[in-house]
Image 1 (cartoon, rainbow, N blue to C red):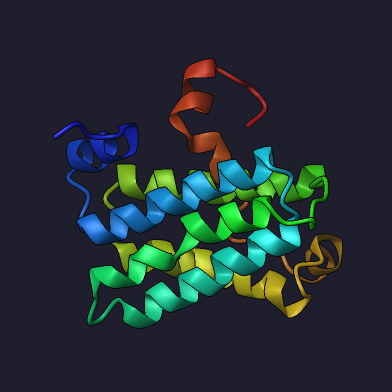
Image 2 (image 1 turned 90 degrees about the vertical axis):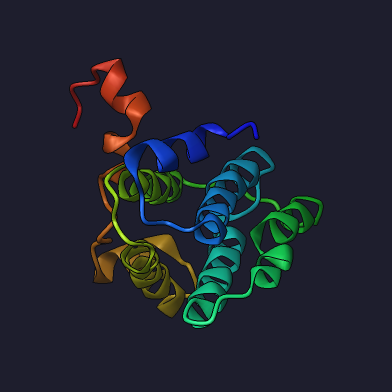
Length: 163
């Protein structure tokens, strides 16, 4: 079996993330990248990820792999084909990069899936309270995931001093 770079990290780190949970996290990362390249608005990608995190976390106790079939990948592709396009602000893109960094950090460091999904859900629900209006939400709270993009393997290798 040929493993993706994401799964290589999972297996090498001895991560307690199951195959289904890892597939979900990988889908989130890929969906964020597709959303950014397809100019899907922060509101739309935020809603999609939030809804799917909620659906997956509700099902995590008695997990059924069939739940994953209709989650993020197809929804983001559908959004990318819609007329609802918008440029993301630097802050919105930064948050999504931090979200990806948090997933990567969790997998590489053997953090249980429940904690990874819990951190994601916290920040996503805070943005949801303000209908994913990034600036309005940021006046009210500071994301727990802030800064995790700096811990990605790419950032660590680049030697960037800004973190």
